[in-house]
Length: 329
Image 1 (cartoon, rainbow, N blue to C red):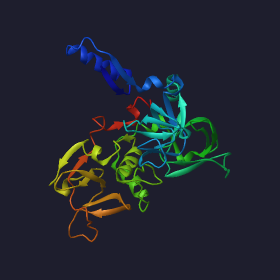
Image 2: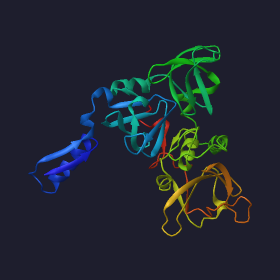
Image 3: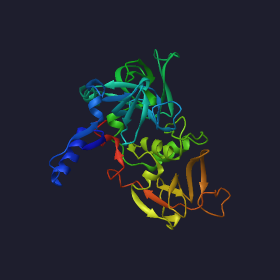
């Protein structure tokens, strides 16, 4: 008897093929496929809030796992009462309330990918009921994606994933297909990270409102059109890896520095290297510290266990250009 749970029919087929290949021709198949329990109209969704909180279990009291921002596509894996287990574009899996999602069919998602869309490039903004107005339709944060409807002067009429329509200052957004063509820019990554200086730490935060250490690197790199893995321990396995002992003079702006347990090698923290031995990270708050032991801002973290260079490595495992991600285009 073959029992267990998988996410997709493709995974089940791979298991059955392996059974046949290894000589197990007769068995009772009792594998549960999660996607079979999701109706076609709800197999995909877009985050409809400026920021949605995803948790490790389907309940509000569970630990925060990550955040999703407006317009982020998710693949729906499982329904759990008023919660849904979803897969993010970075492959991270967590639970989100039904009220945070705008559900789509595969066809509607295809239409969305071809639509003219705008991404919020300002640190924060607002969608308002009329141009130059003050009544809010929704708050907006960097990375939110909305559909284009019309233009009026220096204002754009945009729609949220669940159909709410309002106006936003054109200076706060960029046309998504054009914006996504930007090349690697350490300056852009640094600019975003510095813009968050002083903002508070939240475990699971991955937005410009609140962030954790790996969330800061994700947000900063997303502003440059690059999707990183969710956790520091995952990010440490990507890019061009430089092991412990690398002279900090060899680091470049934008390199990710990983800290953790010296004895076990377990990564628990990440920062973004700036220059002159300094790096920016979120520990209690977003701040800048030094790798130089004699510096006044040399912290308790000491030297990094490793570092990873993302520059030149976009398109390798765990580092995806948004323009090349099939869920977006």
